Image (tube, rainbow, N blue to C red; front, side, top):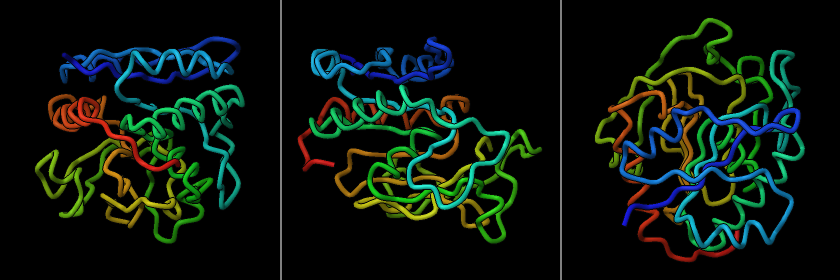
Amino acid sequence: MPAHIGITTSHADGTQRLDRRYTTAIEDAGGVPVLLPITESNRTVEETLGHIDGLVVPGGPAVTDGLTGPLPEELDALDPRRAESDRRWIEACWQTGRPILGICYGMQRLNALSGGTIYGDVEAEHDGAQTHSQKRGAITHPVTLRSSSRLHRWVNTETLAVNTRHLQAIATVGDGFSVAATAPDGVIEAIEHESGRLFGVQFHPERMGDVTRPLFQAFLEQARTRSVPASL
């Protein structure tokens, strides 16, 4: 049976949105995407859990938890309703052993919820940081994968050319997490949890086609073989 993967969405002016490339990436890897509602209801979360095997938390606006500095003017703060809804989905999936893949904002949110810190503007706060935002003229850059990481094993390469679409970045990793990949300037580009069930990438693999399909395929396999870890 294919894994069913819940995907959270953006929220603005009462409307939920999701870039189609997220659902396509799950489908192309052999899974079934399930779009999740912005919700304040524990009952909705509990009843929906029985229909999903894993969770993807995609890109979005600024993470406002655990900031080490102010947000740049060009970055919108996180909508409070999405913030609370995402927290419910993340905690419910983590506590029931469903694996979670955080992408860009999603990675930063996983890290912040685990006690890590986030640069408000990585270029302003990280010594020697290169431009990491397409809005500021960046295009692609390489990342180096740690040989001991699951990400390295999944994509089977030491370096990966990735897109550059973020103004924020992880400053310090949260409890139980380790760094899985870095950019040439030392900015953290991927993290993974010691439980083997939480993963985060700063870049956007849903935009990278065949190159990152093994990442989604491995994540789907994780979703088929979940177990219950300790609480977040």
